[in-house]
Image (tube, rainbow, N blue to C red; front, side, top):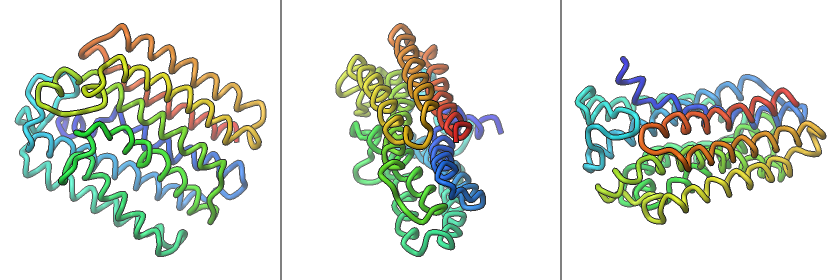
Length: 286
């Protein structure tokens, strides 16, 4: 059980929760919050992320990209705690459960959501598998921007309100940038191991310094977009939320710049928790 919990990568799960919470905050501010579709979106988002994490572990093992004793979380398949076949079955089993929950959202959003669900399901696997795995071609952060920011925030808001708005789009990009920073910390930590096995993450291709600069740029952009998308609805509250997120992110960036190896693991969790805390702050402000 411990190996399976580790494979879920609990430190990263706040990323999927935060996107849904951000949409809930916007819906509450607009007076269109509905808890049933929002709860279903939350379950779908968390299960899809767990499936993606399982797929990442399985396909990285199959491709020889993982090795025992890495600085990141213990990989159950690589270390022999979980069989590859069990991880493969778990990947598609959890993804199938997520899709079943997603199908129920058609009631609120219409049949076109079926296409969105297919794209999300393919994205969960395409991050690590397929002819052009995104995680191995310096596109992981871009994938996170879309699949943990733009898509979940806008769709969660849509199934509650029946529409899309420019303000929600701004907030969705902001949370996508926050989520990308979680992956940046992961890839910043693993740069040496990834370089050894030929996994071309952004941190490997352009270097750790560049990755850290992107982390800072993402934080600044997220704060600005968060303000742009919420200042009309949240008034003075948005200043404290946006500035608080920005200040704490810069503090984390400073800590990351002075840390290496396994000591970076807490910074990954803190970056994810800060994203979730920002979404919760929006709900409180709404």
